[in-house]
Amino acid sequence: MAIIERLIAALLEGAPEDLYPIAFYLVRAYGYDKETLQRILRAVRPEEIDTTMSQFAQDIERTVRQKALRKGETRGEARGEAKLLFRQISRRFQPLPDGTIEWIYAADPNTIEIWADRVLDAKSLEEVFRD
Image (cartoon, rainbow, N blue to C red; front, side, top):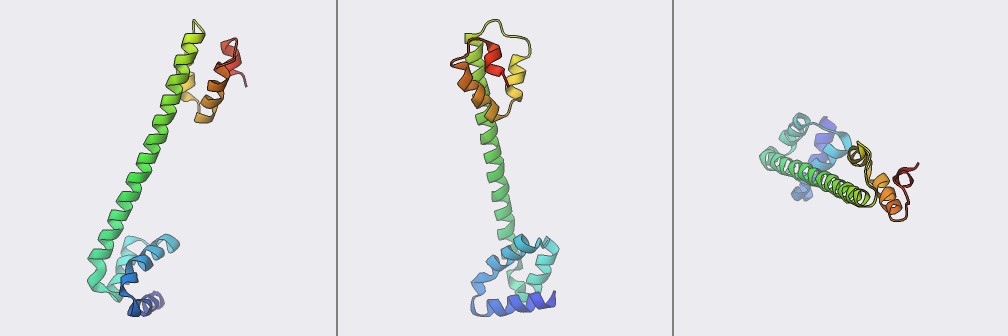
């Protein structure tokens, strides 16, 4: 670890503002945990530990929030597509077999798109859901 600390110290000599990008790289590339990163920072630039760790916490929180938002959007889009398909099918083919709505909502987005295209020309519900 002492070699890494010396390398970082040498890199920061001319550009102290590079501490965060270097620390970020070490975490991403080498998977350093919080304790390892703090030990390196303490050896290289102890006065920057709080600031750098705070930035990491904010970045991690932002990343988690963005992933959750994207996942929620994707899930919402899939539910909306399933809802529209069910509405089209229920208007076109009556009566619907039991479990149709569950079957549609359990399908993946690509399958729902295929079924949505088929519902426009299908003469029966079986044609919509064929393999």
